[in-house]
Image (cartoon, rainbow, N blue to C red):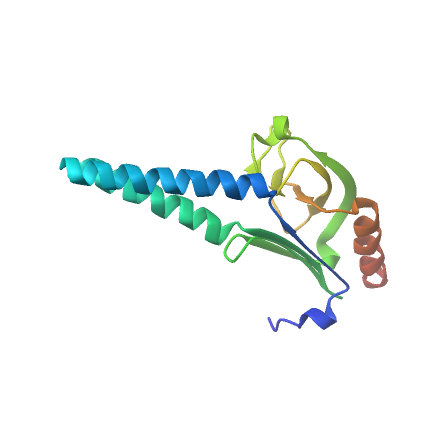
Length: 164
């Protein structure tokens, strides 16, 4: 599939995590590095490997989940973090779209999460989002967006010409 440029998008939104998340991950990264140095000096190879693994996990989380992108093109909706952590559906496959309130209590965190209500969520915060049901997906997807009513209107309006 040929990817169109940003100028061809009907709608595009990029969200980042709140600053406190990055600060918390930075503190965790510093802690792993300091502990790795201490246990290496103490001669514990297994603990050093464990701490290095922790550093790799935190750096990987920062690289793969640092922003959430939501894009509507004339034919598709595409959302997620970096590849392979993205989803894409044709507008024709969208069965419904409705505003949805993302709650920490339902998903237990941020990022790509599975909810207690049977949805998959891609979120960077609690708050407004949309719930998309697609014939191309096994379960509904919930995505954090700033203007859920407007986004649903755009998705359903973009799909309308395809129905005839």
